[in-house]
Image (cartoon, rainbow, N blue to C red):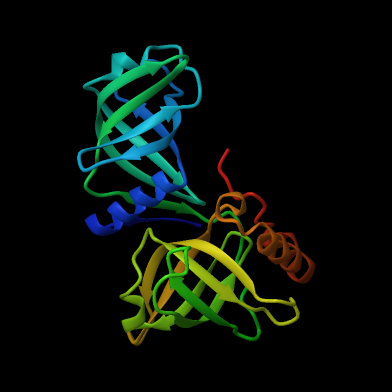
Length: 243
């Protein structure tokens, strides 16, 4: 399943902040760039006017030649790909490593491809959500709609959903019948969809990589439980990073 969502300026800003926090993978494709593979790096800095990517792979051309060029950029965070167009401001080399500065975009577009089916549970479970992975803020209670090793969807009251913003990190806690202790996982909020009556919202979330969020044990237990109960169609969370 594939779908895309236009983010607001506020949501885009939060997503960029999270991308720097987790040093998300960035793929840069400058216009008229002869190297078809473009540039691959990680996002390491952000300010009001620009963002900076440190290149992690060598390229056949000098990155300084792209300064002033328009670029198409993909930002990989969790299992989501965020897209935007911009232009290169600067490129500098420190030792053997290049870094590229890009003009900060006002808005992003999220392109999502769900790799694994999510299972609908016969018995819905309560989900407790808090804004940000450091567990600050008031708790929001919802009900689990579906889940896979990559993410989940849950139903919450519409007014509570307004306190959560697409692109920010959510600390989620939930238990599954027959799975033992509760699971505590960090996730990025990807979308909010009103239900048929517009009284509640369905929140779609993608789990963050266990290695970066400190949830390795919970991720492993969830993957093992889903595989044991439902089979390979809900594939394991694993490290949940992009190649």
